[in-house]
Image (cartoon, rainbow, N blue to C red; front, side, top):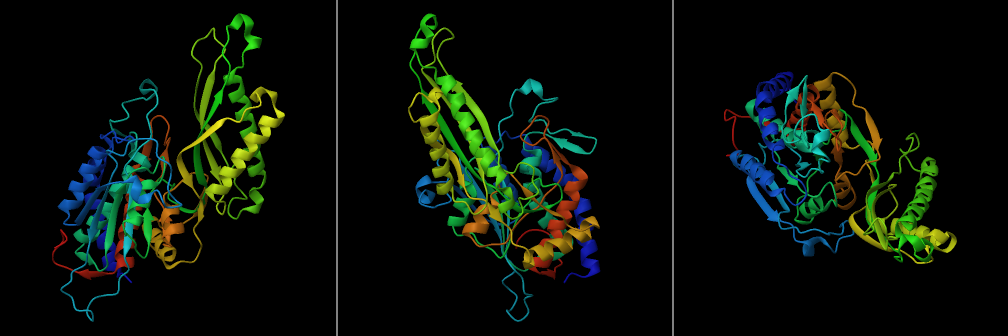
Length: 440
């Protein structure tokens, strides 16, 4: 257990370093690390970890290395710039086994990729200009989740600045593909990175995620029969057919939401299963009956349902609609899986890692840690389901993530950083040290 003096030194160190932490976060937000463009931001993360003396691992994800795994998400883009970065801190090997405090290893994970901005004119400022206004930092990715990614590093810095050396390995992970497949976290796991616990400081309103949904991405393509609009009834309108297919999927969405009482931790959510029609394209000419239409879906599923089972239900739903709804023209649409193919997970209560986080949160926030269930995707499913590691998704207050004027609350971020720093010290164990920097 940490002494009161050590706790005070760690929390004071977060305060001392916080301006530097915010400046580095702003620097990172300025990199537009959209899908396929993450490498420059990863260069900055690599440099920052290297300067701390970590052992460095930077590699381009090879689909061939991970596509065999059941947690893999289908890829439809180039991975030419899809680099993961991991920096490893290792404790002082000069201590004898008898003298070394007992410590447990830790993964501090976060994703560098961000979602598209949408129309720039609908932002109040550039999404790549991380202004600080009234206690909030703005910018695409400021909350989701570059503030948390940087908090991992500066929480470690606070422990070192407090004159303490962690006594167990810590793996600092900056991964790609969280917003679309989860393949970045999966690649890190399959590369051999495992630990006694994982923290992922996603923007979670100062709370711990208890459970979250799985997600499938797929594209539905309808084919029609073109004709001139003067004889429109001789053609078959693929856009009309697409709307009929969407209606059928809405029926499955309602069916799954009606089953929420059968799923632990989801009973009190108003609408846990969301099918989002995120993109739609079709037709060639306003005066031609459209011969094609396709739309992209993000569909949520409950923990315990496999991606394969969900796929079967989705395809069965559309096949039944083809038989009963003449708007679909009697032909099964083409369905292509384009990204997430992920199961949900539940964080079981009572782990030592959760108990430690609760203690550290209460010390930092002076209040009890709350938990909740989210209908969103999280990379924690990789570590929880396939790595059997207690994975704590816990992070700062945010507003408008994936929307316009995304922002993160700075006082919340500071307290989250204190919690993570205290967790590092308590979970990994610490030894007093006169050297307060580096990994020598």
